[in-house]
Image (tube, rainbow, N blue to C red; front, side, top):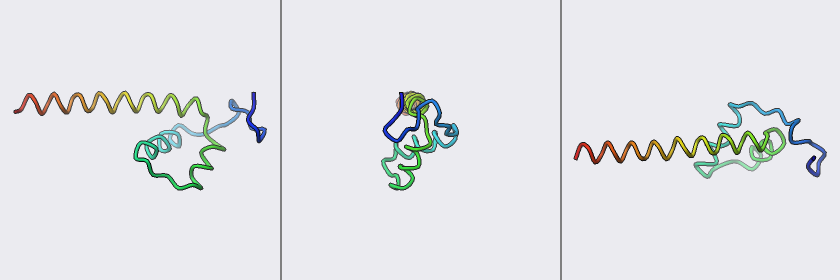
Length: 74
């Protein structure tokens, strides 16, 4: 399966660091259009989904721990 521009999804070789940076910028909701276009060309969508799910899990657990700490100290 390939995308319209002929780049197969499994042949996109983006770094994990680049994927994490793209997901963290997406969490903030700010990203330059040029950077977004570079991500579309270079990053694997499956890697983005995996990092996004992991980052969401870490965020939610962090919020739960913060609330637990605030309630325990009150």
